[in-house]
Length: 270
Image 1: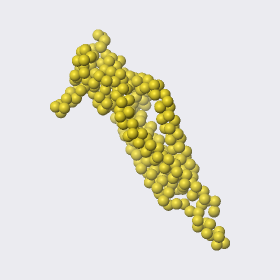
Image 2: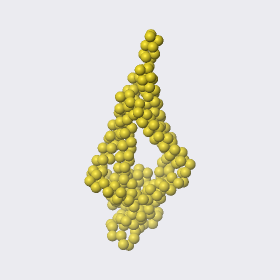
Image 3: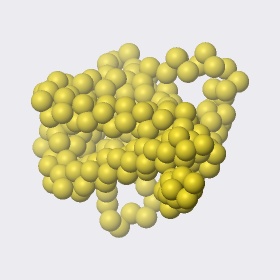
Image 4: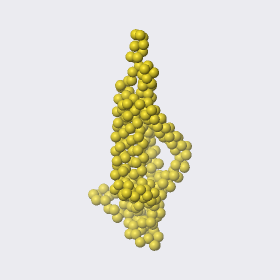
């Protein structure tokens, strides 16, 4: 009898593991809820929620999708992890660890494929940027994303300023009535430190000038090349961020599996 009582006493759920997993997931869940809220608010502001068919109307990439998808995944995972840990529900804990493991595996696979097929990735990035250049004026969020990228990396277009010829507002055809004809967005312009107010018309008619003259006013390097250079210069930081994310995922999986083992051990002694 005493041996049986000792065995029962030995099998218990670790409070440290349980509440560490709960704390880990409550942060995850709240971040997911915040991302979802931002995404839904952005869509509401653009009238997408009142007209869902407009989701497919945008020719380029809608950055709000990042908030919706990432927020949705984080929200579901965080919810499963929180409730699973709090209620010691093995089904939710297994769902959490398997789903998180699947995401980790997909990230690892994507990283390996990106390294092996670098040229293909470069071509896809070029296609992605050019496709969004065409849709620059179609969506304010996409416009802000392109402007941020061009300002941050001091670039213009995928391979150069002439890529903006693909946009109906900036192309140089004689039939184009736009005042922005043969120009580029202000985010391509070389910033004047003396200017406090952004000159949004600085890119007007700049592509009518010769290549050497353009360099005085706008960045002439393409964003694909500049992004590549940025990756090489910040390789350790980027790798560190990805390793950090991977370690967090492995930590979460280990916590969930430990809690599942503890719960099963306790149930086995009932």
